[in-house]
Length: 364
Image 1 (cartoon, rainbow, N blue to C red):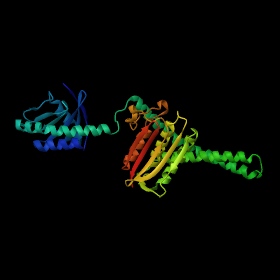
Image 2 (image 1 turned 120 degrees about the horizontal axis):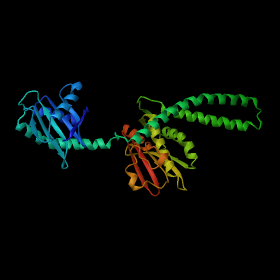
Image 3 (image 1 turned 90 degrees about the vertical axis):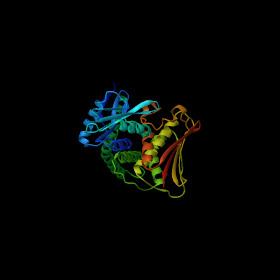
Image 4 (image 1 turned 135 degrees about the horizontal axis):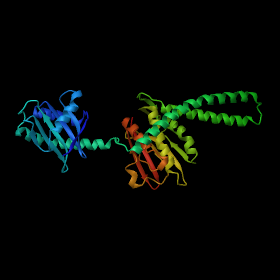
């Protein structure tokens, strides 16, 4: 016998609609939908009663059933019918009345007749759930996630704290600069130090901009400025890899309503991935372009790498999936996809032996 899972789960989607319909169909006090999950039943939705009591009551109703089969038991107060899809039982529908002799064989027939409809709804809901973010992570994945969270918090703290000594360094450099004669041989060295300190300060500012929590406030954004911000952020990264960056933007000013830093982050992720994809090739060209196609903004990031193998192509947007080994987190493309979809857009990939292109498409 299958043991019920004792955790009731509140749901306001298709499962709740099934529970409400079963309750109305049988004219009973309570109805619930339970899903078969490996060797247990998961209470998915409950109709009738108060929230604080529905969980324990639903569990009690399930424990009264001895077998998962069409049945009327408990002096006609409890009725149940299994839901099958693809030749296997995927769940069970249950109705309960506080009055004896409420349910008859006619009620059982009505419930059985409804189960194919419920099966279709439940199967579609299961497909949508599998398409969403993975909710159950392994210990290693959770460890990586918390490591990244801690690293992000530390980076923000570091970026904040490093600005104070940088101000001190630059202040002293200006003092020395004013003390040197114009033709002093050390002037060029002090200028180089000042430029390096300025660069570090700008990087710290960008890290703080990325880490700062913001409420969602879409605003009109110039696409060229979004791309320029992203390029400035990754410039040190691509420079160390000797990558030729080519920019081809639409000559017209393109404006899109967006969360500025979220879109910048999405573009940065694509740029960094493109740079990493060219680590083993001699010709390293990273290109980014923007334009309008079918009344939608398109931002394309391309590389001249080796392409994505067919075996992994379908998994590139999965969280924690990476081909970079210890160097990768498997979150960059996943985050990009989530950000773009939150803006009503899509991300597509085109790849081959000559490189890979990721295309962000956003509504104008």
